[in-house]
Image 1 (cartoon, one colour):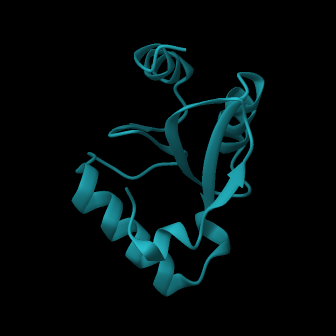
Image 2: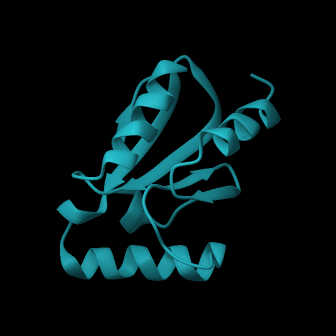
Image 3: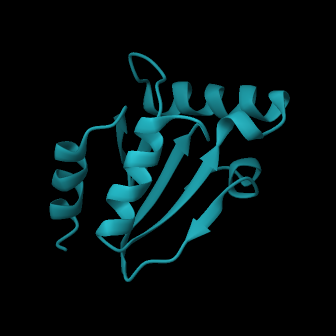
Length: 105
């Protein structure tokens, strides 16, 4: 789903709700990113994340280029949530709920 360089950067969070592939791109100091992780944790969702502010600047540039070219968002904002082949820019629990419901959970 993601190129190898992104796969190497992700950290996994265990959850029983694992029917979907959730990957979030966050900033370690962002309150909205923390809320997103909490939202996923409360629903026992298995997910992976990359704290973009904690990676090498050259890797960050490659990650941002990949997100822009693959998903074509209007803007990059955090958290940047990818669930299967859909994405959500920013903290939006209503959209996350829709994504979970699409997955049948």
